[in-house]
Length: 391
Image (cartoon, rainbow, N blue to C red; front, side, top):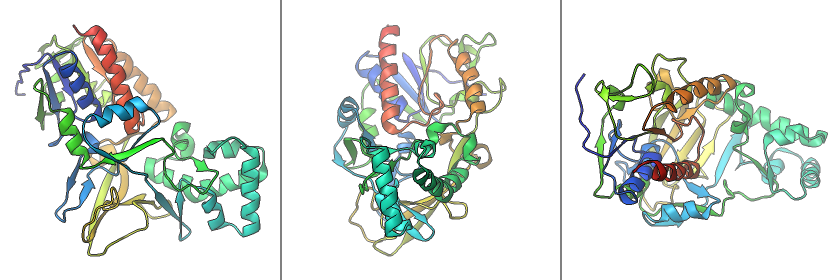
């Protein structure tokens, strides 16, 4: 194994949103020299975007739209570039019909006769008079048989088949937080999110990352596999570089089970394979993102000239196929949150917390299904901890 030297005050593993935000804080607020090791050949993590050969801006790892309820997160991300308002709309194809996603009153109209549809909507408004939405689990738990039957219809037509493909297991084995991610709206509102702040970069996500990382104290090294050089000491309380003690703080945003190889069960992750298509047509589908719960193998299709709207000829779209991370030998996208996997993660977390000068955060390191704003919030929280602990 080759050796590698670090000429910096802090080492960050991963150049996604977590690692980049923390690097900026250490460099700007604490005047620390920071080096970032990124195993991929680009910055920006799964938010990386670029123009394809047809001049269309595409998101390499699936669609991203920044949304949040918290003004301070909105203000933070706006420091690093120009953003435009963007209200994502999505559809789902069920029994040959394209209906809004998340489901709303239009969905009820799409699949029920007028009298039945009115009855369901009336019952929902009566059961949830002060609510704008609810989860599929809440509808299942409602004592109203009309609401229960509607929930069963949605679950069997969409949630069950989509979840089985997306996660590779039966929905009953998943943590309930997964089924709570996509609500049902009690209106005809067609926006995917109801957050007050919904934006997308005017230029690109990659340009935002260039701005975040644009500091004299930050150096990014691409195509560096950190685990080729880093290891945990036999006692489990020191991080080693090339087999020797390392004294500088390390912020790790990768998967903890990969750091502690051989110390327990591998954590399950889902990955994605993309089938990229280009056609000489002006529009492929009626929304940027369309889910296909009943289709064979794939889950959704994203048309990128609509994310954001781009005035270009032709259109590029990607068909997403969920796969097991280990089988695909691809990037780990989503932690598969089950009772067993969370118990296994807790063991790795306890190992990590014993290591001196070692910090971890992010979707992989925390083993949580974060949205972008949640990732940003977690990174900023760690920044405050670092401020009190790093001199």
